[in-house]
Image 1 (cartoon, rainbow, N blue to C red):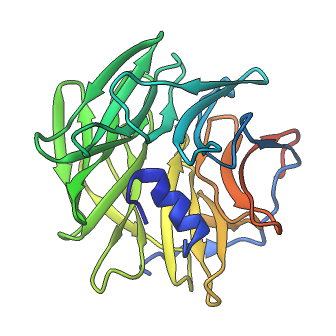
Image 2: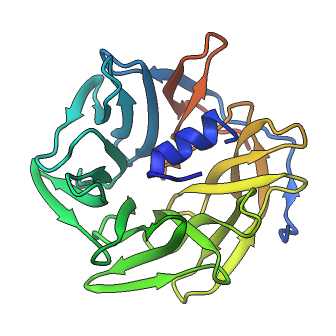
Length: 290
C-alpha cells in the first residue's frame, strides 16, 4: 500500500486498495456539501490532508505523467514546486499555520521528506541513507511519517527535536497523521504481506490495533484533535469503503476512502468514477447528525 505514500494510498485506493471490540453504527452521516478537487491539467487527482481553515493538500498527475503536489485554498489551486524534486512530489498534510509536509523523489532516487512554510522549502531525512515520507504535522510542528527501503519500513514521530522510531511487533509500519496530543494513526502489514491492519499509537508509545469488524484489511489515515479516526477498509468482496471511528464506534461510508479530517468534521479523500478517472473530494458538514 504505500510505496511512496500516495502512490501508496493511490495504489491502495485504485488497486486493492481484529482485535477491535468496537461496534459498527448504522452510519448516520452529517448533511454536507461535496466538492470535487481536480487541479487544472490533472489526469488523476488525490486529496490527502486538510487543516481547520479548510486548506486542502494533495497530489495529481499531469498530461506528462508527472506526479505533482497541490494546495487548494479559497477556491484556488496552487501547484507545489520543490527545488530538489525530480518527477514525483506528494503533499500529505497541512497545519493551521499553513505549513505543508510531504515527500519527493530526489536525483539520488531516494524519497525525502519536506516542509514548506511561507514559501520556504526545507528537506527532512529522518534516517541517513533511507527514504523518508512525512505524512502529518500538528499545530506545534511535530511530525509523523515513516522511513525505510524495500519494504523494511518503520514509523516515526518527531516531537520537538526528539525522533522516535517504532514498529507494530516488528512488522512493516506506516504512519499517517498526528494530532495535538501527539497521538498517531497508521497501519502495519504482517506476513504474508497481503493485508493491512490499522492502529492508534498513544503519546506514551502504547499501540492498539484498530480493524473494521469483518474486514479483509483496514488502513487508518486521518486523525483530528477530538480523536476521530478516518481511513478505509476492504469488505469480503474486496471493495474499498471509507470510515470514521469515534467514541468507540465505526461509521461506514459509501466513499472508498477518507484520507483526512479536521476538527470541524470536514474530510477529504479520493474516489474513482465509473469512467475510470480518479479525483479528490472535499466534504464539509452543513448540519449535525446526532
